Image 1 (cartoon, one colour):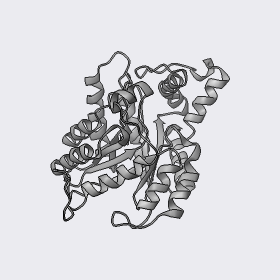
Image 2 (cartoon, rainbow, N blue to C red):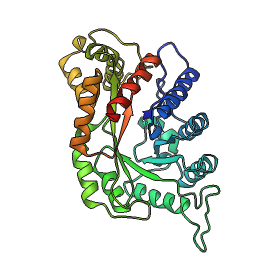
Image 3 (cartoon, rainbow, N blue to C red):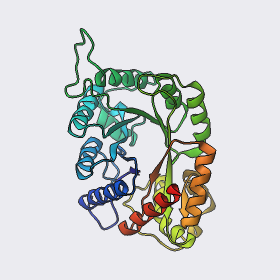
Length: 323
């Protein structure tokens, strides 16, 4: 599961974080493998900006599920700081921490400048910084002058994330696992994972390709109820299209029917990989996704306004995958 820690309309950041903890505990009980948090900044409707802090909070509230970043936006941080933070997390929760890395800012241009100050990022920086992180989290080398402490020799698993071909190729070259952001940018999914698999070079970290793909999920008792609950997500996407960031809104009837055709098309494009429906519909759609992509894992994104119904949605998905 990937959690953006949505702040619901009329609720607080504290409540959003408490819901994330409750959801992670439920996902763990259902047998989910991972619970990742995503880094975003200057977005009032999301409470996930301090990603490493949230990773530690969720790990403390769970027992066995892997917890990680999906991802840390590496251009916003010095690799040494990331290595020390995740090395510390690995020392506290051994064998349970993942470090997913992205190369986008996770915010707007003004906030990006506030995060990076005068630092100008180029396309060549991301591969270099990934290599630096691999070295900092790996065994200490003779004569190595900069050591992540904690972090050195922790071997925190590094994942590369992306929605284009750049990170797919880099992950293949480095022999790293790869997660594609098809939960919001599905257009290049098949091309990216084909490129990754065909160019994969085995490494000490990974013997064969490993692909995770993002899947928006809204499961309910009926297809009609699922479409109603999904209107909260439709409203979020509409806000992104219009440049209006808001808290997660309660569902409304017939939301899509009130939108202009261009806006409906944008929502459909954004959510092309979404699985929305009854238990039977969800089971059928998840099966088709796995068959077409041959993904090793599905990373579900489930932002339903009502927390109880969100947990029920995960129940339905877990039952479908078990079957």
